[in-house]
Length: 487
Image 1 (cartoon, one colour):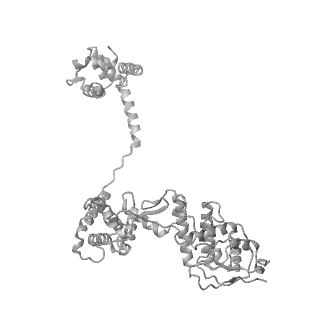
Image 2: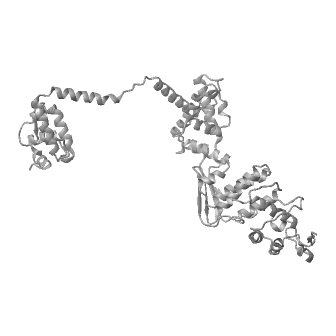
Image 3: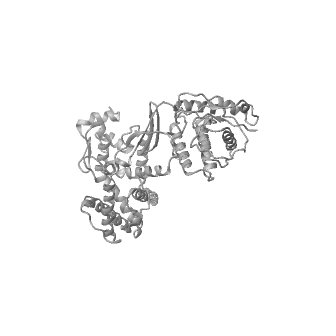
């Protein structure tokens, strides 16, 4: 027979103080109540009622009961606590909770009131029932897929679970890709579009247009510039943003900063609304979520660095889009004409610049494309070589063979074999006409080739050409001889 726990009503206790629970001797010996639960209840220590005292009791009792399992279906009442600790529940409620937890740990989630689920989450956040942070996060994810997605959770529980998984991942040094998996999709979208507008150079027209639409006061997708002109309209808006970013400068401030400000650093309070939790320790930590948002811990205090909406100048941003749409409608003959607002005339130049870029691209697109097939060049060269060989006399062939032999033995790397032999001949005061003719070269071209090859070594032209005859400038004879190793 189940015995009752008698709660003393002490009138002189303050409202926020705990009231002692008297347990009768017969209740202690009740065979229907597992001894483990009685032992856990006796671990509770009364103190000053502070949060630290409550947390200490919670962790002590939770660790003691971390492996406990139960099977009980004798209570069907209602739990009125929002996020209870063990000490807040009756014996029957405790048995119901541990029975539900036993099933949940095996992957079988049954419907239950939210207070019991919060108790389970508080255990996980304190590492009770999970050996590592990875296991804690996995069990929270299992709860989401098995309990929340099954439709058993109310809206508030869903919200808390999602935010706690994200905050737990940040404070426990999970990789950014894992943290992003649990981040609020609305925050990720906000930061993605903000990053696109901050650095649009490598972005596609659709990406820039989507980002502009996300922050715009009016839905740009409903603009006649887009509904009637499609991708061309989107391109104009994308080009507009690139133009204003590259041209606008006021007091050394770019247009993005004018509209969205600079990243702001503020205190961040992860898991603040969880009753009990492990805050990840006091060591310095960093978590860069994306280009526009990061979290970091210094001395046990967490901070968030991000773009604050308080800094946004929506009026300036929307003025640009409104004036641009007015100009674009006129240019594309789309929709009804919009009236020019006097305080938006500053934006006209950027819309016109986008139109100028569009016209230029249109002209380029209409130009005929000339494609040169380079695959035939090898055949042309081959045919030319055969023609050349057929025109050479036997004597010229022998001379060319001698030149090739000289080339094989040539060790100088500044000039090829033919030009090296020409230079050697000139150095000996001889005529190089024979080599020039045999190689089918022009004297002026030979002079230019040698001068270019030796310029870095000597710093001046070493060969003079009067049209047909070559000679080495007297001042550089010794230096040329040294380079060729002819001294």
